[in-house]
Length: 352
Ligand SMILES: NC(=O)c1ccc[n+]([C@@H]2O[C@H](COP(=O)([O-])OP(=O)(O)OC[C@H]3O[C@@H](n4cnc5c(N)ncnc54)[C@H](OP(=O)(O)O)[C@@H]3O)[C@@H](O)[C@H]2O)c1
Image (tube, rainbow, N blue to C red; front, side, top):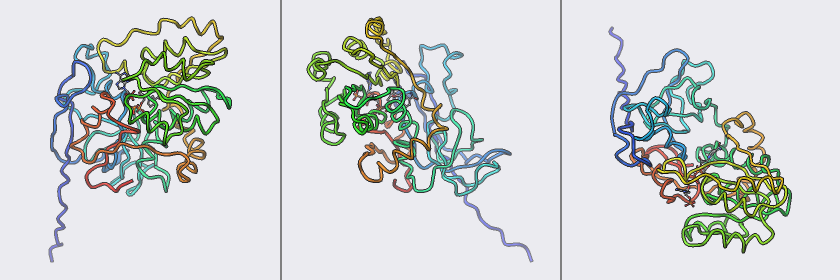
């Protein structure tokens, strides 16, 4: 008797490909929708279904820019899928480190199905049991690592000090503000718009909030920090750094986390004009790269997971649903529309 043929439905892979380099920030025309067949994993690779995506302003570097020399840009080649951090479910594996059913944090294409060797932009790792995908990409992902280690280690906080942060109501900022409060600091957050400032004051526990869209940031910093600033946590990389340096107290620290104002905007704002202030106050400025802290993720999770579960640390998220919305989710970062961590849940993925 002939063996019964089993019908395996073909996996259609919907994708967003890089269509062209934008002049400045990525737009809808930057990406092109495509449908193809799901890839097949080779030796040392696994096939995964992508469930959730994270969005980060540095993705503009992956998109590239029309005015940047192609060879030097490090951008994803035209015609290939756009990429981002994802939480994905392993379906098939020829990789010794991953099994079908594993839920992994990786850097994948904007598509239904991806293959990975677990290497690349950041190594893939299994999401610990009990950690929902939204937390794995936000408070307990690269975003949370930047906030946690930026505040708790690089800033060397001492209770009672004054902590000022730009991009305060975004992914990194929303966690950093709350961790700074938990570490006993006086916190002033700078964000764009009344809704974000309201969230900072009412939900995140900030002591002061400055709306950079409607207020004079320098004047408000002087009002809210009459004795100066001990720690400035910079997410913007723009002119706020000058204003903070002017007000830095003796032994003050500046944590350089990001530069959203520089990534996708042409021309970028001028660099800081008063770095010598660091000399006058024996100050220190230090950058951090969260990816390098991945081996210490469990240290951060040991502290943050109980805080998240108890509700003392709130995971503020801005979630769009459906792969079709991926370009829109990215665009929200550059218009400042996102409140909290910008995420996207795939159409049929489980909720967080
Ligand atoms: N060092 C690391 O390893 C690491 C890791 C993760 C993220 N980062 C960096 O941290 C920063 C925050 O990242 P995130 O993912 O949390 O993003 P986010 O703050 O959630 O989103 C970006 C925010 O930047 C602000 N913005 C937009 N356009 C701007 C402009 N032209 N000038 C100044 N601000 C602008 C907007 O907030 P407002 O309008 O409210 O200001 C917007 O909501 C980014 O620079 C990111 O690259 C660094």
